[in-house]
Amino acid sequence: MQKSVLVVDDQEDVRAMMKIAIENFGYSVIEAGGPFDAIGKAEEFRPDLILMDIGMPLLDGLSVAQMIGETEGCSQIPIVILTAYSNIRDQAKKAGCVDVLYKPVEFEKLKDILDWHAAL
Image (cartoon, rainbow, N blue to C red; front, side):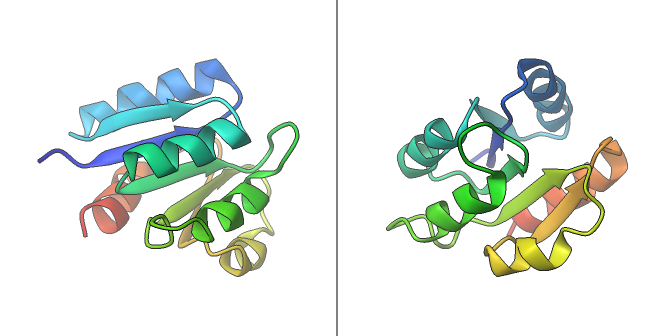
């Protein structure tokens, strides 16, 4: 069965770019354009990995990650924060995230994260 990745970003072009790359690595992609959409899709689809943008309107990605981690049936889904902020790793861990992927995304690192966290 193909592993799935939920990509959460409020910018459609970023989601589209990530979708192409992730599908090329052999994973299926679910997209969410905002925080509440992300929570709903995490509950509905139970993806193997969530890639969560940190900077979104209404709620930041760290808050959304924490909410997903507290949602019944979703606490075991690994969440990786996508960010351009360099000093976020400690905050991401406190929010329950397993890793940080820095923007601009290097596709080699993206593949490593997918293979490490989603393939388990």
